[in-house]
Image 1: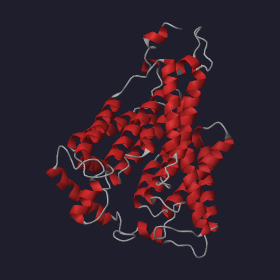
Image 2 (image 1 turned 45 degrees about the vertical axis):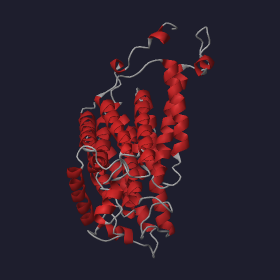
Image 3 (image 1 turned 180 degrees about the horizontal axis):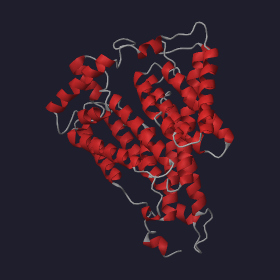
Length: 411
């Protein structure tokens, strides 16, 4: 029915394929920006209703075009991981098992749809720009909350009344890395200056969240800065340094006299803060995860059962704080091996990208890998969008299959 509306019998499209594809990529970019706010609004998840609309439009566009990009080993590995996660609902004791499995299927679909539509540099820039805008917005929200003197979660600044500061810090790290990329790549001087300023402000914003993992992830992501500076003229280097210094001084001059720095102090603590996910406690959680793997090597405890398992064994309701161990605990060693291989392929692919996209894809992949080693982010939309951005960097024509036969006959 939908196809008959968009395509008449005489093969005249009421909406051209190019226009429908452009609409799909812009919607994916909007979803990428909104998905960042899921970190601060975990109860509302504003990207959920938008995701339904985006999926419907993208599926419609694919049906009209009748062509597909070639699948990669990452698609197969991701499908294997999600398939085992869904199967593990049969032995999981968690009441959230079905919800978590459904989320995994949705994220796999998001990755595959994003990969299909990121077949040009313009489309890639749109979705990457969406993530950059979302990360920049998180930076401004954290700084606004700090300058207003409003703290939550033990003196930590997140820009929201709820939400995990570690997730917010990761979103800022993603945004800052992409902002640095656009600060060098954009043709608009205004965009370059705005992107550079927001990237500089990401440093104090991340520290203010009190997230130890966020500081590490941001440091890994900002490896893009010396990488890009090495290939530009001295004038561009001086301009970037000026923007960075001015941004930091601007924040410093506006610090309230009664500012709460307990979240900042938490970064220096080994044990302490709120006592959740401290450095020592992370070691205990990881050690216990290996004992669970030894007792349930093939099946694991079932999807969404990791926190319950830790509560039974250690008396704390926390995840493993390591994505690879988390997947092994919940879905078994087969799924964990596939998850590990998936990220091995992504890292290798990012380091083989040609041209100006190589620094940003490598930095995005490495910072995400750091996040996965320090926390568990496998159920986050930005992670799967980053995977699609990395795998879609090959824009060669041979990555697109020929039109399907039933559509080829109409052209």
